[in-house]
Image 1 (cartoon, helix red, strand yellow):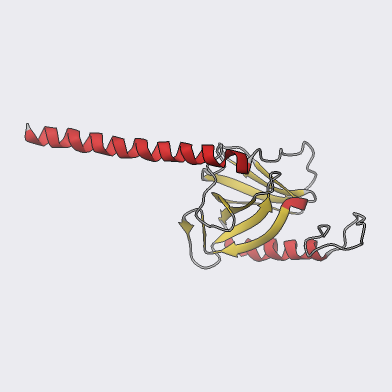
Image 2 (image 1 turned 180 degrees about the horizontal axis):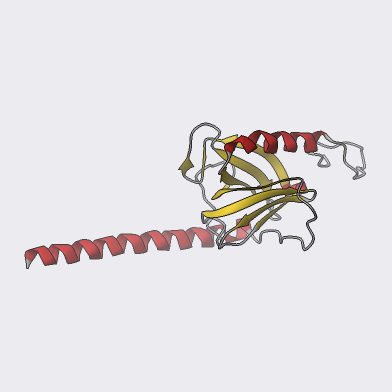
Length: 183
């Protein structure tokens, strides 16, 4: 009889801890809602990919520069199997069972490799991370742990090459930063 009571108490404590964790996650989402806002919609016509698609695990998105401040709005903080492809107008992270993430070209700040993101820690250069700016002005990092990590150098160098190429956009003073954005 005493063993059954102990088991019930342990189960109730465990359920209490789980419910508090879920409550904290929902509260984080409410706090971040204004800061994050709506993600950009995926364009109807993407054309042919310039790079990819490559498969892997979407590890999440975090508010930059913290690698642990996971985005809790919608399902954008959820891990999922995904493919990533580079198009002329941006990057598409197509997640299985979750909303796709479209990162417009003009929102991309950097593409790099990191050791970890969103609480997922790997070996050196284990996660491909894209830093980009949401329509609200908030910078976030979105990460993918690729099935084939040998793709990372191509993604990083492709971003550098795109940043260095001249833009067709006319600027009032003729200047642009390293990512081709007007200063």
